[in-house]
Image (cartoon, rainbow, N blue to C red; front, side):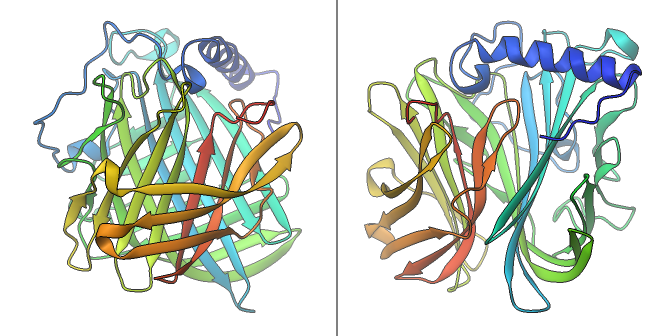
Length: 366
């Protein structure tokens, strides 16, 4: 949304990234994520994720992200949501390069959502010149002054404590994130299948962050607190060529359990389902695809798009029957590759809250 381009190296880098990413969008799948990935490292089952190394960047894979969402409450008891995301994409195989010859492009998104407003921003950077980078230990991720960083005290096992901050013309935030619980492996011990044809990612989460800090909107600062969820994924071809987008849920349930679910939409209507049940003890169990039911129940028209913003969520084998409700049905990220991302609440067999992300909804309704 807000880019504030300057006639500088930063403008050149951002403009070049925009051009290359727009070209990728013409490829297969949402944002080109289903296009052929020859020359990049392949995601294979059986890999043991290693920390702190896997908190850092993987430039031999085509794409990865560090994705933080937070469900918060201000001092008046009003709910709000916060997003901070950093993406790395390699434009060609070959790993990391320094200077202006770098093959790496970076993109960052930030957002703050209240019931009556949604504010978002996007930035781009070229790799190799220090404008954006991620290091594993001590953990640090940034694009310009948007930062997610730790210190010597940050644990490799828990990826905590961390601090996160971002600022744009009409919002800013700064939070401290704490937990003593270890990160959680998604999929089958970190190997997350995305199709029956072999597409997959390496995927883990930190769903236990307790968050506290401040959010400023319209010049008014509010003290906030709540909980946050961070996702880490990297892959070279995370989508099949006929997968048009996804509907993804991260849920904090009142029972203390956590739940991650996604539906990858196929153009022929035969969608791919996956998820993990994360018990109170932290044990992460993959859910069988035929045991997951995600059913849209209401749509919101945003511009020329119809987006499914309310859902029924059922996992009969776990006694889960939920209805999800968005805090703000117009939580549209009008970014280079637009998508819906916003906080939700759930009710039914369990109470709770979390985040919903939906990609690939085009102007004809998805």
